[in-house]
Every structure is written in C-alpha cells, then in structure tokens.
Length: 585
Ligand SMILES: [Zn+2]
Image (cartoon, rainbow, N blue to C red; front, side, top):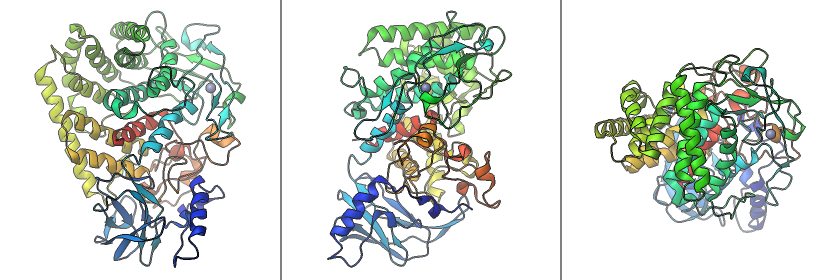
C-alpha cells in the first residue's frame, strides 16, 4: 500500500549528506539536532524557499498550537507564531493549519519547529532563492536532447548518454518512403518519441519565457555545448528542438505529426533503443495534419522575433517556415491525426485545430504586422474568447489562450483596440478568479478537485503561468503571490511534503517514469524534472492498487511504473521554467 514515508527508500537526497555533517558539527552544543532527513511529512514547506518580500506560509496537518522558525546553522529561534485554525481540505482529506511567517525577511536558511509534531525540511529566504531551481529545470531540456551525446558534466557525474536515434525514416503513413534526416529534438517525456503538437505548447511557453522574462534569465548560464556563442542559453537550448520541428515540415508547408518508433521501447538508455525512428503521418492525403502545422506556424513566428537580434538568418528561416505552414493550414483547415494501424506511441490526438490556427494568426500578426493575419484573428476571435473564462486556459490541446494573450501582449499599429480591451478584461477576470479559488484552498494551491487528472502538476504550473501573463498585461501583486503559491505547492507544500522536482529541495521524489533515470547508473534520477503529479483518473496499475476512497490529491505513487502520476514531460516542464523565471531577481 502507498504510504508517503515509505518512498524515502535507499536513495538519500544529495543535500542530506551535507545536512547530516552540519548536524554532527553542532551535536555537542545543541539540545535538539536534526538532519534534513528528519523533516516531518506533517509540516509542509517550500523546500527551496521564499522570496524576502513575499508571503511565507507553511502547512501543518497535525493538531498543534504554535510554531517557531529556527536558523539551520545554530538552531536559534528567529520567529515565533501561532498556527491558524484547522480547516478540512476535501481534496486531500487533511486537516490543515497555516503557519504564517511572512514577517520574517532576513535572508538565511531555516526550518520550522512545531511543538509536539517535529521539524520541517530546511528552506531558504533569499532574493535569488529560485535561481538554482531555474537552472536545473531549464537545463533538464538539455538532458532530453536526442540525436547527440549528452553529459551533465562534473556537477552530475554519471548523468550522460551516447548519441541516440541517429537515423530517421518515413513510415508508410507519411506518404513518403526511405530515409529521412530527422536527427535532433527533445525526447518528449519518459519515452523517446518526439511529437510536434506537444513541442508546440512547450516551445511557445519557453520562447515566451524569453520574451517576458529575458532580462531575468539572460545572465544564467546553462553550461550547454553552445554556451558563450553570443546567444542566450535559453534560446540555445530551445533551438535544439526548434531545428527538429522545422525538419518535420514537408516541402508543401505541411508538418508531419510525430517521429517515434511504432511502439514504446523498454526501460533502456536512449542509445540502446534501436527501434526505427519513423516520421508518422495521417495515412492518407495530405498526410500532414493541421494542428501540428499550425503549431509550427505559431512557434516559428515567435522564433522569427526572438532570434532576430542573435541570428537574423535563422529568424528569417523561421518566418518563411511559419508563412508556408500558415498557407498549408488555410488549404487544409482541419486534417486531424489518429495513430495509424500498428502504431501505439503517444497520440496527442485533437479533433479541432481552430485554436491552433488562431494562435498562429496572432503570432504571425505580432511578428509581421501584415493585415491578412490580423483580419483572420479578429474574424475568428469571438469563437474563442470564452476559453479565457475557464482557467487554466492553456495546454497542449487547447492553445486559444496563447493566441488571445499574444494578441493583447503584442499590440501594434492596426491592432483592434476593442478586441485587445476584451482580452485584457477577460484575462484579468480569470486571474482574479484563480486568486479567489486559491485563497479558499487550505493548501493555497489553485487546483480544483476536477484538476487532479493526468499531469495535474502541469495544470498547477499553467495556473501560475496564466497569472504571470495577466500580471504582465495589468500588474497586480496578488497575481504574482498566487503564482508563487502554485510554485510552493510543487516544491513541497503539498500533502506528501515532497518536492516534485528531482534533486531539488531536501525531500524530492525519487522514481520518475523516465527511461534515462531508470536505466542509468546514477542512484538519483536526472535533475530538475517535474513529476506529472496526483491523478484521480488512475490510468496505471500502481494507481489502481491505491485505496479506492482516496481523495483526488492523494492519488499519486512515487514509482517508476506509475506513468499516469509520475512521468516527466516537456509540456509541464516548460510552465515550471516560466514560473521559476518569473521569480528571479
Ligand atoms: Zn534519442
């Protein structure tokens, strides 16, 4: 049976060793000595920490009255407070008390001591407290690179793989045959497939991270093979996947849906997966599909803007690809994709591509200022405006919000001011609704009971992204605080008291559904990877084994076999990066 404490296993977090040492050093003088491994699961903190000026809240799920915040270096009490009244949380079944220590602003490393309960994991208060997490989360994309050898270097010895998937070929469903040079891109998730549609929302989110938070992230080196080439590292890493996406475009402008083997490989390292990597299409004319094509149009249109100052030739190539993709999607407005017979890798099926086309129109308008794209957007936007009223509004299948936000963020001469005003109004109204629902939640997370589905941690991150996008349209500190609340949930302030990012925080999860982590030599999984999170849908055997009456937020297993609750994926990694970037100084 699943118990959160049983997951600590033999893989001690890397930080523990340092903390144990620290504890030993103080053992002679202190009455109470804690190692980081002794944090109570009943005290939930953001294990990375809090910004000095932000609200600082921990959650306690054992009956208690008061708490103290102690400095980790000498166990001195720096703050005393009373716990809030107990309130029941239906999503977890927990009785929740809040420990608010927002007034503590002094930078340092601390833990909570709750009389009669125990102590929390350590956390820090610092202006740049999330910089390391950002570095690891963004660098995790480098670890997903396909078609090249990857080595995380002396910082993470043993985290490496040889060049993988060096041959591409056409599947019969693509309308072509023979070899195809489609080397590159990122492994999508725990598997080694590459999917244009999921790359679409991922790349949109990452390129927007640059557009909105470029001044915050530009100084953070990711130690990539390209580092120091004059292009910021976020854009260096994004380009690896973009180059592959561009290769998925046929000469007529259409884009094939995915490149994968016909079925998933075993839990082997990528270079040991010898299943042929095939470009897969719809199986009949025109073979390419509209959602993938319009997603490429949107992403390449953004790329044409953001790469312009660093590589004008590459920017122009992207704009040309975006235009060609746009024209193809006009000619074939809704060719949808289903796995052809004999193919059972991820489908990313979507029966409606109007939202992808809206997003492409918005990005092309924002980049070029050409009237045809504006006309299309203004004509079709009434069909999508209501999507902003249902946060979290964005995901790989639903990208209308990306189009609407982009139109309002990228106002230029000729933009329809009524449309812009309407989008801004709906976006801020949605942000206020998210703030309200988060205040009502005892754990201060934006997730509603219905949100505990496959990839719920990605939904939490996307709530955060939506709030930060609203903040960049109409600044409001409550949006930023609420976005941070979702980050705190992901980094430890949750019912399991675990950080859902590998090797981040004192008590991270250990067993992602991620082939290089499962098959690799290192004890800990590859660093910086966000877990999918609790999933009441229970689509795998590990989850169906859990007690039937479990509340939705508890349906999670830190087990490699739980692909439905513990897989990593680029589409939820990207909004984590976006959120972390927003917190940087
Ligand atoms: Zn590969």
